[in-house]
Image 1 (cartoon, each protein chain N blue to C red):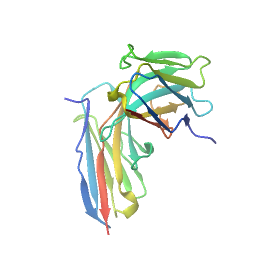
Image 2 (tube, rainbow over the protein chains, first blue to last red):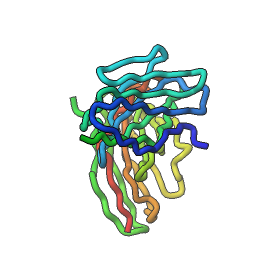
Image 3 (cartoon, rainbow over the protein chains, first blue to last red):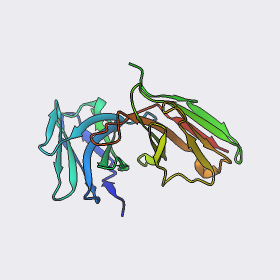
Length: 109
Length: 115
Protein backbone atom coordinates (compact mmCIF):
# COMPACT_ATOMS: atom_id res chain seq x y z
CA UNK A 1 0.00 0.00 0.00
CA UNK A 2 1.33 3.44 -0.91
CA UNK A 3 1.99 6.00 1.82
CA UNK A 4 -0.17 8.57 0.04
CA UNK A 5 -3.12 7.45 -2.06
CA UNK A 6 -5.36 9.36 -4.41
CA UNK A 7 -8.19 8.31 -6.69
CA UNK A 8 -6.57 8.64 -10.12
CA UNK A 9 -9.84 9.55 -11.83
CA UNK A 10 -10.25 10.85 -14.39
CA UNK A 11 -12.98 13.12 -13.14
CA UNK A 12 -14.94 14.53 -16.08
CA UNK A 13 -17.26 17.33 -15.03
CA UNK A 14 -19.20 20.10 -16.78
CA UNK A 15 -18.34 23.74 -16.31
CA UNK A 16 -19.86 25.11 -13.14
CA UNK A 17 -19.85 21.78 -11.33
CA UNK A 18 -18.49 21.19 -7.86
CA UNK A 19 -15.90 18.45 -7.57
CA UNK A 20 -14.04 17.01 -4.59
CA UNK A 21 -10.84 15.01 -4.35
CA UNK A 22 -9.61 13.00 -1.40
CA UNK A 23 -6.13 11.97 -0.43
CA UNK A 24 -5.33 9.47 2.32
CA UNK A 25 -2.00 9.08 4.07
CA UNK A 26 -0.62 6.35 6.28
CA UNK A 27 2.18 8.07 8.22
CA UNK A 28 0.68 9.41 11.43
CA UNK A 29 3.81 11.57 11.92
CA UNK A 30 2.80 13.73 8.96
CA UNK A 31 2.82 17.42 9.85
CA UNK A 32 2.20 19.56 6.80
CA UNK A 33 0.01 19.06 3.78
CA UNK A 34 -0.35 20.69 0.39
CA UNK A 35 -2.22 20.48 -2.86
CA UNK A 36 -0.29 21.02 -6.07
CA UNK A 37 -1.61 21.45 -9.58
CA UNK A 38 0.23 19.97 -12.55
CA UNK A 39 -0.65 20.77 -16.14
CA UNK A 40 0.29 18.37 -18.91
CA UNK A 41 4.06 18.31 -19.47
CA UNK A 42 4.61 21.05 -16.89
CA UNK A 43 6.04 21.07 -13.40
CA UNK A 44 3.85 20.87 -10.28
CA UNK A 45 2.80 24.26 -8.95
CA UNK A 46 1.72 24.92 -5.39
CA UNK A 47 -2.03 25.41 -5.23
CA UNK A 48 -2.60 25.72 -1.52
CA UNK A 49 -1.54 24.60 1.91
CA UNK A 50 -3.93 22.56 4.02
CA UNK A 51 -4.46 23.67 7.61
CA UNK A 52 -6.10 21.78 10.43
CA UNK A 53 -8.91 24.32 10.61
CA UNK A 54 -9.54 24.10 6.89
CA UNK A 55 -8.82 26.93 4.49
CA UNK A 56 -10.37 28.53 1.49
CA UNK A 57 -8.90 30.38 -1.47
CA UNK A 58 -11.57 31.66 -3.81
CA UNK A 59 -13.30 28.65 -5.35
CA UNK A 60 -10.95 26.20 -3.67
CA UNK A 61 -11.38 24.73 -0.19
CA UNK A 62 -8.92 22.38 1.48
CA UNK A 63 -9.57 20.38 4.62
CA UNK A 64 -7.57 18.09 6.85
CA UNK A 65 -8.89 15.26 8.97
CA UNK A 66 -6.04 14.06 11.17
CA UNK A 67 -8.09 11.41 12.93
CA UNK A 68 -8.95 9.68 9.66
CA UNK A 69 -5.69 10.71 8.00
CA UNK A 70 -7.04 12.29 4.87
CA UNK A 71 -7.07 15.64 3.18
CA UNK A 72 -9.56 16.93 0.67
CA UNK A 73 -9.81 19.55 -2.03
CA UNK A 74 -13.13 21.01 -3.11
CA UNK A 75 -13.44 23.03 -6.29
CA UNK A 76 -16.63 25.02 -6.75
CA UNK A 77 -17.92 26.49 -10.00
CA UNK A 78 -15.39 24.57 -12.11
CA UNK A 79 -13.76 26.41 -15.01
CA UNK A 80 -12.27 24.95 -18.17
CA UNK A 81 -8.91 26.21 -16.92
CA UNK A 82 -9.18 23.99 -13.84
CA UNK A 83 -8.45 20.95 -16.04
CA UNK A 84 -5.21 19.52 -14.69
CA UNK A 85 -3.82 16.83 -12.42
CA UNK A 86 -4.06 17.58 -8.71
CA UNK A 87 -1.34 16.14 -6.48
CA UNK A 88 -1.44 15.95 -2.74
CA UNK A 89 1.79 15.97 -0.77
CA UNK A 90 2.36 15.02 2.82
CA UNK A 91 5.42 16.07 4.83
CA UNK A 92 6.75 14.73 8.10
CA UNK A 93 8.38 16.89 10.74
CA UNK A 94 11.73 15.46 9.61
CA UNK A 95 11.18 17.01 6.20
CA UNK A 96 10.28 13.85 4.29
CA UNK A 97 7.88 14.64 1.45
CA UNK A 98 5.64 12.06 -0.18
CA UNK A 99 3.50 12.83 -3.21
CA UNK A 100 0.39 11.05 -4.32
CA UNK A 101 0.08 9.96 -7.93
CA UNK A 102 -2.48 12.65 -8.65
CA UNK A 103 -6.11 12.93 -9.65
CA UNK A 104 -6.88 14.06 -13.19
CA UNK A 105 -9.69 16.55 -13.68
CA UNK A 106 -11.20 17.44 -17.04
CA UNK A 107 -13.76 20.24 -17.10
CA UNK A 108 -15.90 20.22 -20.22
CA UNK A 109 -17.97 23.01 -21.75
CA UNK B 1 12.31 36.90 -8.45
CA UNK B 2 13.72 34.03 -10.53
CA UNK B 3 12.29 30.59 -9.95
CA UNK B 4 14.10 27.28 -9.91
CA UNK B 5 16.24 26.92 -13.01
CA UNK B 6 17.05 23.58 -14.59
CA UNK B 7 19.04 22.58 -17.63
CA UNK B 8 18.89 21.02 -20.07
CA UNK B 9 15.14 20.89 -20.64
CA UNK B 10 15.39 17.83 -22.86
CA UNK B 11 18.04 15.16 -23.26
CA UNK B 12 18.16 12.14 -25.54
CA UNK B 13 20.98 9.66 -25.06
CA UNK B 14 21.88 6.10 -25.91
CA UNK B 15 21.80 3.55 -23.12
CA UNK B 16 25.05 3.13 -21.21
CA UNK B 17 25.96 6.79 -21.83
CA UNK B 18 26.40 9.23 -18.95
CA UNK B 19 24.11 12.21 -18.44
CA UNK B 20 24.05 15.15 -16.05
CA UNK B 21 21.35 17.56 -14.98
CA UNK B 22 21.85 20.95 -13.37
CA UNK B 23 19.63 22.88 -10.98
CA UNK B 24 19.82 26.35 -9.47
CA UNK B 25 17.31 26.84 -6.64
CA UNK B 26 15.48 29.98 -5.63
CA UNK B 27 17.86 32.41 -3.95
CA UNK B 28 17.88 31.94 -0.19
CA UNK B 29 16.36 28.46 -0.27
CA UNK B 30 18.48 26.15 1.83
CA UNK B 31 16.76 22.90 0.91
CA UNK B 32 17.03 21.36 -2.53
CA UNK B 33 15.25 18.26 -3.78
CA UNK B 34 15.73 16.03 -6.80
CA UNK B 35 12.69 14.06 -7.90
CA UNK B 36 11.99 11.56 -10.63
CA UNK B 37 8.55 11.55 -12.23
CA UNK B 38 7.22 8.83 -14.50
CA UNK B 39 4.15 9.32 -16.63
CA UNK B 40 0.96 9.01 -14.63
CA UNK B 41 2.76 9.02 -11.30
CA UNK B 42 3.66 11.59 -8.69
CA UNK B 43 7.20 12.84 -8.14
CA UNK B 44 9.40 10.40 -6.22
CA UNK B 45 12.19 11.80 -4.09
CA UNK B 46 15.72 10.84 -5.10
CA UNK B 47 17.72 13.05 -2.74
CA UNK B 48 17.21 16.01 -0.42
CA UNK B 49 19.92 18.50 0.53
CA UNK B 50 20.00 20.91 3.41
CA UNK B 51 22.66 23.37 2.36
CA UNK B 52 25.50 21.16 1.09
CA UNK B 53 24.57 18.10 3.16
CA UNK B 54 22.58 15.23 1.64
CA UNK B 55 20.14 14.51 4.47
CA UNK B 56 17.99 11.93 2.66
CA UNK B 57 19.41 9.87 -0.19
CA UNK B 58 17.73 6.61 0.75
CA UNK B 59 15.90 6.39 -2.60
CA UNK B 60 18.88 7.26 -4.76
CA UNK B 61 20.16 4.23 -6.76
CA UNK B 62 23.73 4.73 -5.76
CA UNK B 63 25.18 2.20 -8.18
CA UNK B 64 24.51 4.55 -11.09
CA UNK B 65 23.19 7.83 -9.69
CA UNK B 66 25.22 10.51 -7.93
CA UNK B 67 24.52 14.06 -6.88
CA UNK B 68 26.39 16.98 -5.44
CA UNK B 69 25.71 20.42 -4.05
CA UNK B 70 29.21 21.54 -3.28
CA UNK B 71 28.65 25.14 -2.19
CA UNK B 72 25.13 24.72 -0.94
CA UNK B 73 23.59 26.54 -3.87
CA UNK B 74 23.31 24.84 -7.26
CA UNK B 75 23.32 21.09 -7.69
CA UNK B 76 24.13 18.44 -10.29
CA UNK B 77 22.52 15.02 -10.64
CA UNK B 78 24.39 12.44 -12.70
CA UNK B 79 23.51 9.04 -14.11
CA UNK B 80 26.27 6.76 -15.30
CA UNK B 81 25.57 4.55 -17.13
CA UNK B 82 22.01 5.33 -18.14
CA UNK B 83 19.52 2.49 -18.63
CA UNK B 84 16.32 2.37 -20.68
CA UNK B 85 14.27 2.49 -17.47
CA UNK B 86 15.79 5.85 -16.53
CA UNK B 87 13.65 7.60 -19.12
CA UNK B 88 11.55 10.02 -17.07
CA UNK B 89 11.27 13.66 -16.06
CA UNK B 90 13.83 14.77 -13.48
CA UNK B 91 12.49 17.59 -11.36
CA UNK B 92 14.40 19.86 -9.03
CA UNK B 93 12.61 21.73 -6.25
CA UNK B 94 13.66 24.04 -3.47
CA UNK B 95 12.22 25.27 -0.21
CA UNK B 96 13.33 27.78 2.39
CA UNK B 97 13.97 24.94 4.81
CA UNK B 98 12.93 21.32 5.18
CA UNK B 99 10.94 21.66 8.39
CA UNK B 100 7.21 22.19 7.95
CA UNK B 101 5.55 23.98 6.35
CA UNK B 102 8.32 23.69 3.69
CA UNK B 103 6.40 24.69 0.58
CA UNK B 104 8.40 23.42 -2.37
CA UNK B 105 8.80 25.24 -5.67
CA UNK B 106 9.66 23.23 -8.74
CA UNK B 107 11.78 23.88 -11.79
CA UNK B 108 10.52 22.99 -15.27
CA UNK B 109 12.27 19.62 -15.21
CA UNK B 110 14.56 17.75 -17.58
CA UNK B 111 12.85 15.22 -19.81
CA UNK B 112 15.28 12.34 -20.34
CA UNK B 113 14.86 9.78 -23.09
CA UNK B 114 17.21 6.81 -23.11
CA UNK B 115 17.31 4.90 -26.41
